Image 1 (cartoon, rainbow, N blue to C red):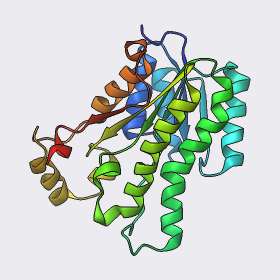
Image 2 (cartoon, helix red, strand yellow):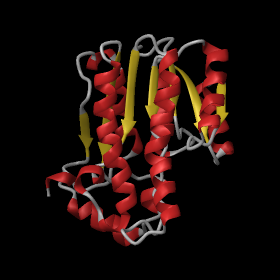
Image 3 (cartoon, rainbow, N blue to C red):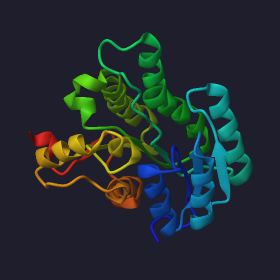
Image 4 (cartoon, rainbow, N blue to C red):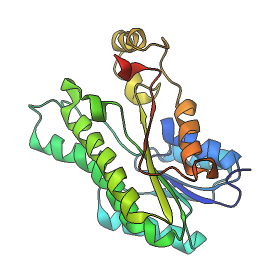
Length: 240
């Protein structure tokens, strides 16, 4: 198994891409730390399903909360081999006229949280890999969600910066999905989902497990000579 005995932290792993990633890595031998902020029931259900021994509630936009999470991981395992910065959200209205509070909260949720997790977990990583979950909108842009796309664009750049800084011991990459059948996409409504489907060359919306497979590749030894890269997993959506 590719991740036997590896200690893996997956943020936002109570549902969606995070849950699929936690499940896949656990099935391949990883000892997964399940993180959540609001969805306790889902997080605990997933932990029971995959045999996770540590479930942590944490608001990753707060540095004190991140420090507490890291302390729990250190006490339980003493080290970390893989970090998946998956936690994120679209806050609306998030266009260019958004309130300053929404703008700041969006950047904190999608960008600052990943920086804080990396900052405080890296000392527990002698070697290993980090993957940040970004979005094709981070380089395409999208008018209705300018704050979100700005945050994801920043996370793409942070990935490259961290890849340079943490080499050669730790590899840092990012995965850029387009639209995935998660609560975030489903909340957009059937009309918009159908529009996304028609605009995608493969004519369907990705399932979370398909993004999880890309993440698993990048944190595995199969990607041992890859760092600072963005793997686009979008069914051709960004080709338009």
